[in-house]
Image 1 (cartoon, helix red, strand yellow):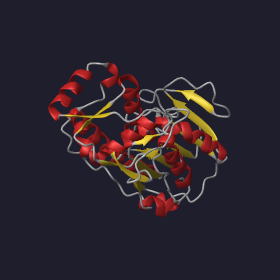
Image 2 (cartoon, rainbow, N blue to C red):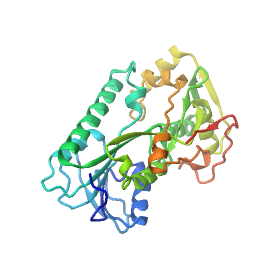
Image 3 (spheres, rainbow, N blue to C red):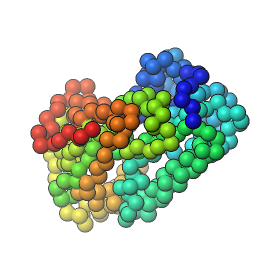
Image 4 (cartoon, rainbow, N blue to C red):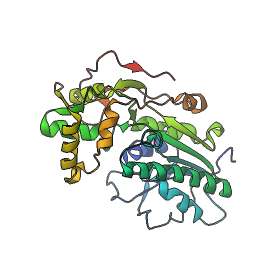
Length: 309
């Protein structure tokens, strides 16, 4: 496997997503020439970056010569994209994103979620296989709940619900533990890990720097929006009926009864291997850092604890 890189061209797929929002400027600051690919329209503010608008579901990677590929698009697309590249390969290194959902949703009551888990597992195996065949050093990151750019379907959804209705419903006490991870910490992990040989051909769970309950996380969103928490506990049957009705609306189609069950489940992961191998040190969760409000206030209860590592 390569110990160094002869060029400093980085290709970023899925570049307009929440991790890309932070990764592109970090790569530029690190001295990379950046080629960014997105299915969404090219941002008008992007400077010093070569952008290409492509749909990787139907189109191949462009005929460029990057040393490193940071794949932020769906992982399932990557093995086929790499397998179709011509020889000799210019790409020597791949860093891609999966999710800790491959563990937390493996026994989900929702068949669609179980399909997602199977898809992630299959994609991780396929990526390792194609990279081995083509002598590409790979690393897979599995983040926990991502926040920080206002583009996620978890914390941003909570904020949108609060803004619209003025309260947030919880099943029972919402005591399941969470480790939200900031998208910028994931972007930093990409830059930290790309040249570290200890990370070659390995997968890492990347959790955030603080462990807190689902309820505390929701309270933090209220404070970020400058609102006092208004949290209502709703019985399970009534809650699931509400979700069933809400799924008929486009903005709530991602909801499922299985998500409610997880409100009171601990979804925690150790990121110490990432700290040991490439210095990963994620920030604590702060209501002032959600990317939701220009003047947030951090009033999280003090019983939350910082994660080791």
